[in-house]
Length: 521
Image (cartoon, rainbow, N blue to C red; front, side, top):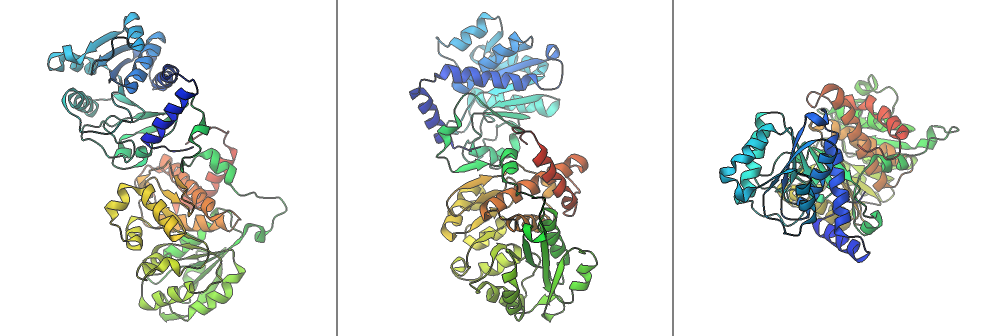
């Protein structure tokens, strides 16, 4: 599913008009979708009081249509007009003809009537502002939204935003301080880029994407896409009945050091738990007995050390000889940045005949200190930086990266000719061709040590099974994050640890395979 900027959405709206689809029909479909979502809020419909906050534009028109449908379905509805609408507004006329309470802010001294409506409302539909250019909220709009937020903070009140919460930038996720927290956001036709950018993404609540009758083909030229369960199911590698371990690929993991032994375990386990046929761990020789007691299914390649638990530069030649037997080389998890290890990494990556690379953590930190490092990397590679590592690699500040995660990932994936997995809430995956995919998941439970090692292993394990590097990166992110959602449902979003993901991974893959087409997370 494509993710659009506000201008791309406007272009599609204009194209719909050219093709003979009237705005009134799209508005009717949008309003009905919002009403249906409102109707699904727990609680008997006849006990609800839905307050619709209506602005001047099409977003307000969608809210008026929603009010009409809810009234016709037997719900108590009130409409609060925050700005004047055109005298010939058909949707407003229909609402008034039905006898729905309509109050204009211009006639509400000190917004006293709004206070009364908010006091009795069980659900509020925010239909004030749409995807137009964000501007500082002033006057009645600011006052109304501040009252809405104050009410929601004081008692149970469901807020449903139409397209996006009012006061959010549709492209960046920047917000006005008065932007309310929604429980549900019903975005229309296509998700908007700003819905996945912080701080706005924290105010979206549960995101619902409403089909309002706009053909998906009109967004074909967009190069940013939302990862979905349908896409994941279609991309999962096949598991033929006559397979052997060679069918599902071989992964060589070079990881671990005296202070980060667990990283090697987590990365190898991640690769195995998504179905890689054979995983070999190459690590400092003194660490091998420790890891073998826990990681029984892997094979091992003990490496020479410069000191206990630290890989020496002499290990590079061993890896260069052995890695030709593997489909993927994963390098970096928990290696540390000892000078000997740094020499090892630079020497290894100077080899021109390496398998597909998945680089994480200290491999990235070591590369970041090497001028024009991306020109030295052989062949295809997936880089999996968190924002701090990305900052070191590209020279931008963390704030600059976080303010436009898709833009930063896309720019450098193209410039470096590598696939980039920019970790964090709503992981961004960008490929060298300029295409970008965004994860729908933001889970604070995954903000804990070791989850990045698991993710890197998952990506490497999927790449070994024959997927393109871009698809392996995207599917790895989706599967890993969906496993995190499964754990959060059981444990909550505090206290999960990286190893919790490991047993959840195969269960997640099973659920993705068995899901009915059209089911989305």
